[in-house]
Length: 300
Ligand SMILES: NC(=O)c1ccc[n+]([C@@H]2O[C@H](COP(=O)([O-])OP(=O)(O)OC[C@H]3O[C@@H](n4cnc5c(N)ncnc54)[C@H](OP(=O)(O)O)[C@@H]3O)[C@@H](O)[C@H]2O)c1
Image 1 (cartoon, protein in one colour):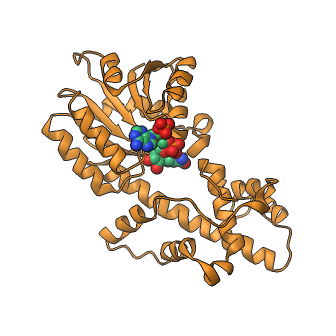
Image 2: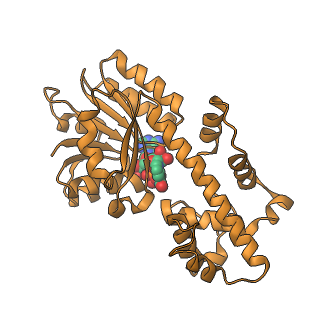
C-alpha cells in the first residue's frame, strides 16, 4: 500500500482520506482549519499543519511523492498548485480532484511539466456517500505515469469505478459532462414532482413505487424519495447553491455543444420572480436532492 498526501479535508477530502486509510494506505493530511487535521489524525492519518509539513512527511524526494488536492476549483486550487511547485521535485505527482474547467487543468499540466512534476486532473463523483459506496474517478494526465496513482484510484472507487481517459484535461472534461447529465436528470425529476403535485398525487408514494423496477429507477430517484420524506422538506427554499454553472457553460461552449435540456435546466435554476414561482416545488426538490448526495447547503 502507498503513501499519499491529502490537501483539503472538506466533505470530500475528509472521507476520501478515511477510505484510503481503511484500505491500508498511509495518509498525510493537511487542511486550512486545524480541527479537521486533528480529527483525521484520530482516524489514523498523519497530521500536517502546513503544506510544508505535509510535503516533508511524504519524504525527502528520493521516493516519488503524491499530493491529492480536494479544494474549491479556481483561485484556491491554483494557489496551492503554485505553492507545491516550490516544494516538490521532478517526478513527484499532483492530482487535482476539484470540479474545474478542463482548460484550467491543461494550464496546470503545463505549469507542472516545466518542473518535471506529473499532473493529473481527476473528476470525483459520489458526494458524501463515497466513503461507503466508493468514488467514481475520471482521470486525465500522462498515461505512462498513471500507474503511480492507480493503486489509490482503485482503493477510492468501487469495482470498475475509475477510468483513465487520456491526456491532461480529459478527467475534468468527463466530470463536467457527468455534471451536465446530472443537471438534466435533476431537472427531469423535479418536473415529474411538479406534475404529480398538480393533481395531488402522493409524491413520496409515486417516487417510491418508481424505485424498484421502472425504467426511470436510479440513485437520484431514490434520493428524491429520501429528500421528500425528510421532515424539513416543506421548509427548504428555492435557492440552489451551486458554483458549477459557469464552469459547465464554459465546457459546453468550448466544444460548441448542443445541449438544449441542460440549457433549460440552467435557465430554471437561475429563474427569479414570476418565472421562479412556476417551478417553486421543482427548485425545492433539486436543492433537497443535492443536499442528499453532496451535503450541499439548503436555504430555509
Ligand atoms: N460535495 C460534493 O458532492 C462534491 C462532489 C465531487 C467533487 N466535489 C469537488 O471537490 C472539491 C471539494 O469539495 P467539498 O464538497 O469537499 O468542499 P467543502 O466541504 O466546502 O470543503 C472545502 C475544502 O477546501 C478548503 N478551503 C476552502 N477555501 C480555502 C482557502 N481559501 N484556502 C485553503 N483551503 C480552503 C476547506 O478548508 P476549511 O475546512 O479550512 O474551510 C475545505 O478543506 C470541490 O472542488 C468540489 O467541487 C464536491
